Image (cartoon, rainbow, N blue to C red; front, side, top):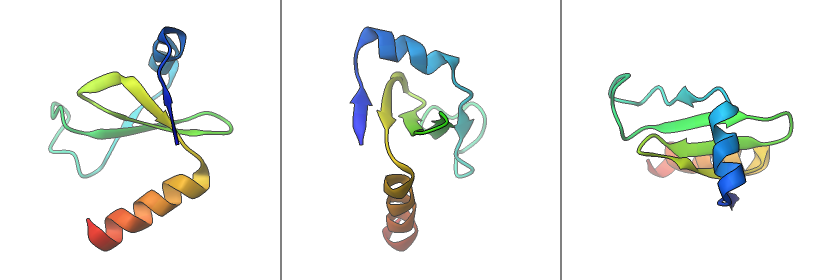
Length: 72
């Protein structure tokens, strides 16, 4: 996983269609995990800090989901 931490990349994060987790407390809840995808890369961010985006791989995202299901 890597942070998209340059100003250009943070601005780029706004052009994606973000989907909130189904575990969110509602549409207005600020503490939600959101996901978007590019043709090659899943992207993750927290609703409270939308400029901080984590790029991962499909394998890395699958491992995160498995871990959250097991220990979450």
